[in-house]
Amino acid sequence: MYEFFEGTIAYVTPAYVVINVGGVGYRILTPTPYAYHEGEKAKIYIEQVVRENDISLYGFKSQQDKGLFNKLNQVSGIGPKSALAIMAAEDNGALASAIESGEVNYLTRFPGIGKKTASQIVLDLRGKMGNYVAENLFNEETPKAGLSQDLQDALAALAALGYTQREIDRITPKMEKLPEMSADQYIRKGLGFLLKK
Image 1 (cartoon, rainbow, N blue to C red):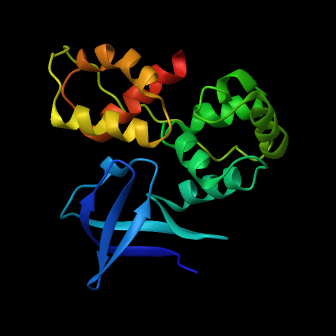
Image 2 (cartoon, rainbow, N blue to C red):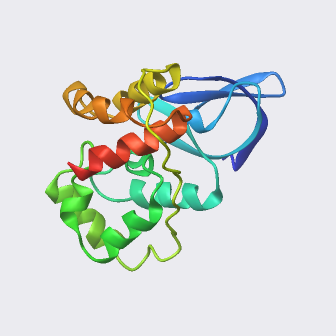
C-alpha cells in the first residue's frame, strides 16, 4: 500500500523508529534504527505486512533493501522479524555470497535460523542474489575503553533483534575496546562479532 514515507524522525528506539509525516507519527520497524537520528529529515521505503492479529510497517534506506526483505520474507520459515535480524548486519554481499554458494552454516549464525530454514533460504533464493553488493562500513582506529550511550543503545538493539543476553555478554568486552562510533556502527560491528562465533 505504501511505497515510502518522507518526514522527520520523531524518535528512535532499539527496535523501531517513529517518523513524523504531516503531523502523523508512523512506527517503522527497521533493521538498524540507529542509522536514523532524532530531528533529521528522512525518506524510508516501506513494506506493510498484514497478519491475522497484526499490521506492521517495515522500513528501509533503499528500494534494494526493501526488495531483499521481501525475498527473505517469502522463504518458508522466515518471518518479518527473522528477515530484519538477517538484514541488520547490512552486509548484503556476504549474505548473497553465502546463499549463492550454499553456505548453510553461515546462515545459521543469525538468530532463529536453524539448518532446515537456512537450507530453505538457499533453495529458494540461490540465483536471485546477484544485485547485492558488500560495503566496508568501518574505519579501524585506536581502541578506547568505556560503555558509552551509543554502545548501550547498540547492545539493546542486538537484544531486540533476538540475540540472547549470553551472546551479547560474550561480545561486550570486544565492543568496549572499539573506538567510539555511532550506535549504528556499533550494531554492525557487534553483528560481525556475533556472526563469527
